[in-house]
Length: 100
Image (cartoon, rainbow, N blue to C red; front, side):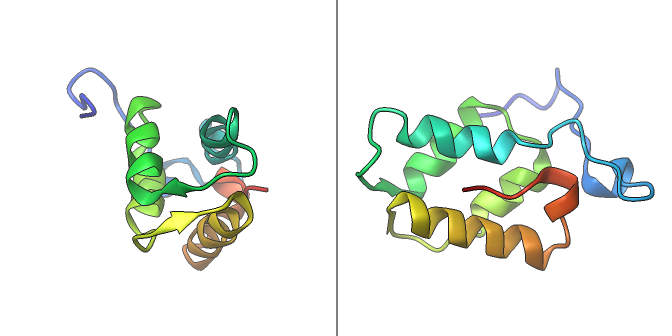
């Protein structure tokens, strides 16, 4: 479980001024890369994604993206499509980046 007492998390609302990238830009891509590092053609579950996101201590906005994933198993392409859809729907593509 994330320890929010020792880390202050920023949200898109506090870091977006004129389309600036958040310091967490690219962390979702890193998450995807870590999930498939030894499992390029395999699948991961939502629980796998959530667990890795907690280990990586993603900011609250990115944890919200992960929380909004539908339950199920994901090959890399499908996971990226789902994450990108959620990020885009929130208008956070320029703030946090999309994944591939």
